[in-house]
Length: 142
Ligand code: HEC
Image (cartoon, rainbow, N blue to C red; front, side, top):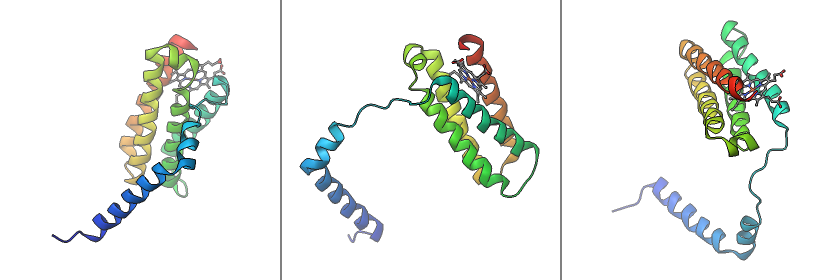
């Protein structure tokens, strides 16, 4: 059987990746990579998260140039901030805190995905759910 073009390209990439994995320099660079640590204090991160969520709410309320492109970017940015929040001390200490950060992360990515499909009503529903997650965590930890 002939391999398709993409299968061949994949095979070449895979062999290349193994080659890189075996190279001494690459290996030590990976081993010396420290585990992830947020640089922003939690409060500062929250200010940014709040800014992005407000941007999302404004874009839901009011049409403007490149509305869905902006929603996609803001959704991903909020997801990334939540992702970082998952590495803060509270998330390491408390399972519920960590779960809420994961919920915002996946809902932020969901907004980005729905923005690609221009599904405004569904974006509204996800934004409501995000709002509830913000409140749940604040009720206990803020
Ligand atoms: C996993 C927990 C958690 C989630 C989820 C969360 N927050 Fe927070 N938030 C906190 C904590 C803890 C503080 C207090 C931080 C401090 O005072 O150092 C805070 C503080 C804030 C503040 C500062 C309020 C003030 O005192 O002026 C804002 C604004 C904020 N959050 C917005 C949001 C928004 C918007 C969301 C949802 C998109 C959200 N947060 C989701 C934990 C969370």
